[in-house]
Structure formats: structure tokens, C-alpha cells
Image 1 (tube, rainbow, N blue to C red):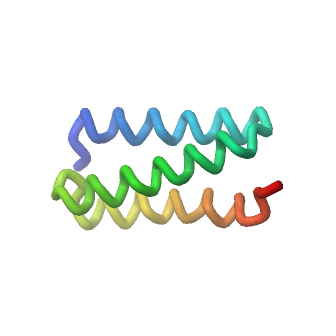
Image 2 (tube, rainbow, N blue to C red):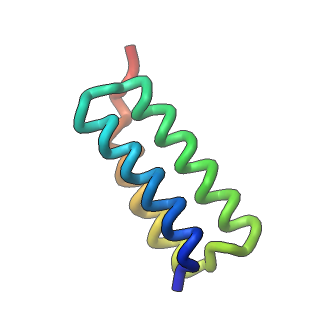
Image 3 (cartoon, helix red, strand yellow):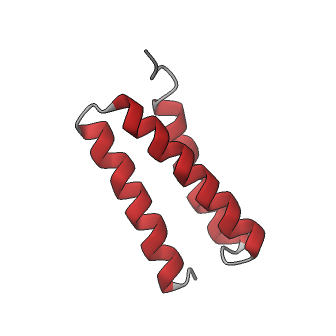
Length: 73
């Protein structure tokens, strides 16, 4: 189970990414994705995100990354 503060942080970052995608802010969406990827790795490395939860969150992040493959100017 993900701790409340970790879940809140990840939810906030996913929400920022989603909003930027919905508003077609490509640069901000790319930055939000990079921030999210970095946060997930940091939380996993520090032990705050357990392996099972890490796999689920990482799969969700990878889904967004795949959607955004063609995002560049």
C-alpha cells in the first residue's frame, strides 16, 4: 500500500501531466512527464515506493510516455 504523502505527490504530478495534455501544452506536458519519471525513480530508490506499487505506477507512466512519443516541435 502506498503511503498517503507518496500517493498525494504522485497524484498531483499525474494531474499536472493530464491537464497539460488536455490543454495541448506540449512543452509543459513533456516537462511534467520527466518530473514524474524522476519522482517515481527517486521514490523507488529511497524505498518509499515498494516493488509491487512501483510496477503499477511505472506501467502507468510508461503508458503516458508511449502516448507522447511524437510530442516535439
